[in-house]
Image 1 (cartoon, rainbow, N blue to C red):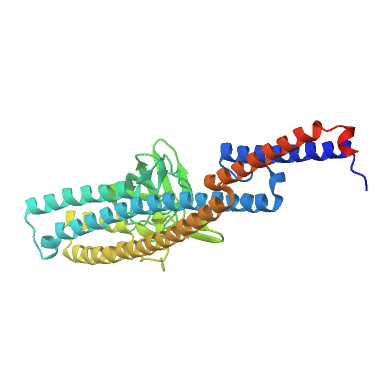
Image 2 (image 1 turned 120 degrees about the vertical axis):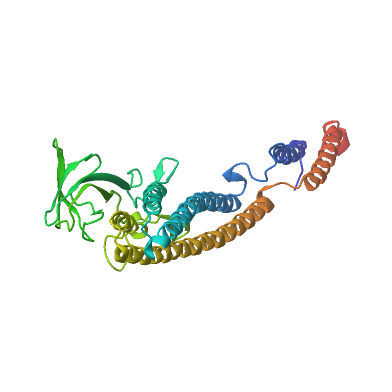
Length: 361
């Protein structure tokens, strides 16, 4: 086969172009720091990188979910701890009275203390985090515990002279001294004068009686912390402070109603009622402790999920970096080799271009 000058020149040009293309590719890698800058560079490797990047994005979202859940639960724990502390204060406030103490000053101080403690417990129940109520169930933008006052009449389902009906609606559970457990609002009359109709008759007659209404729901908010794995982060108030049905997950003590009844019994010097109320407060403490135990188990689970997620992210980042990030030392050697090859091609091409017909004779 005869090798013509034209074929020789074409081969030389091809070698120059190929070498230049390799050098351009190396320079692009050095400039970008990446082995693959477009899918056509290596479709299989790029597909793997895209998949790993998607998994890291998902893992980052899980980390964010875990962080937010951790903050939510820790804030909830602070509120539950505060409730528990106030329940302990209430028990101390009535300790002397449960033994028969009748001194007016002691009784009056106990009443003032109990009323303040109840309000503090309500405030804890209405704790917010970034404008969201922690104890409202899934109705997180609704203030869960509404405190009103009205006149009750023994044997009547009507609460008259209500100070406010704001936020109240039929179906809401309501409690207070002289209101049977499990009672709900059946009708709201804005008045004036404002009044409520209850699902059960009041068992006591009182003017300006304290009324506790739960405006949230029993829904559970869960956040995904790993693929197919969710964690409940909220504690509905009707499970913690004011259970609306027996068989609650933590207990059956309506803490707010207990405080109201205890205040009424202290005011009436009802020793038997005070002793019963004190016993209810012990049960309330157990109830709040049970909720906190559940909360701690959730925090432990979040911590475990967070550790696993960090391991996954670290592993993916390492593998991704091994595939995508360039080895500058290796690229430097390859660039040097290509430059030598290019210079050799230039030299041989220059010699070939100087040949004439006489060189072939």
